[in-house]
Length: 261
Image 1 (tube, rainbow, N blue to C red):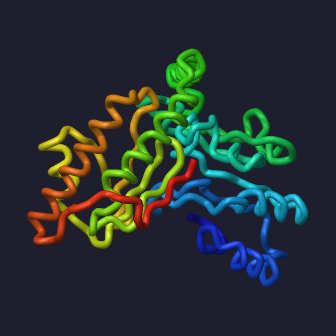
Image 2: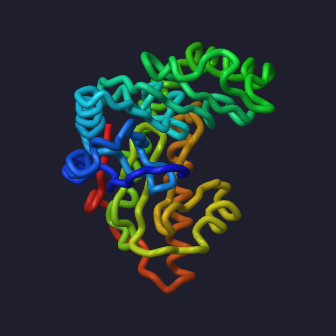
């Protein structure tokens, strides 16, 4: 990030309060992801965003949320901040808004919205009419097909099945996530996993922070596809573990699992 900023451990409210005491006179805004994407699908602790909102309001700071990965229904609500019953001052959107078409947006309210006036900010491709039309169409389709609710229902289903099938896997530490944004933390990196998943089971997955499998299924996910993902991922993990000489699953259970609804 450019400029002068102070980094605080994600979800650590005491650390945040300490920074408020030592650097409060320098702070103008707080920027946070409701769920860390590249950070390993880390979900903010319950009440964390609400506490940040309260502190920002009390000190007249802006609360800025990065919803590029979580927004547009991904977590089972239109925006992840809605799970905490708060409203930010500034919010960024991108990926889900364009459904594959490049677009980004910055939304603001109140005094934050007054910082940019017509003509005061622009970019070469800003306000692209085609991308904006696509964004409007994506919103219409999400509403018409009730895809936010589908993300909630199928997300719960997927998390539950991952618990059942991978709960006893010796290489799985934790399953976490919300809606259709899920992270499976492994005990160690297994480099071949993404290749095996793609080549042998048709699964497009990626790994963040070296050992967290990140799953971002489409919002149109169906129940039958949930089972394909779970079984394909389990088989991929077993094969990758075997190739690396690691133990594979022997039983199923819920040890070490976190299921967030």
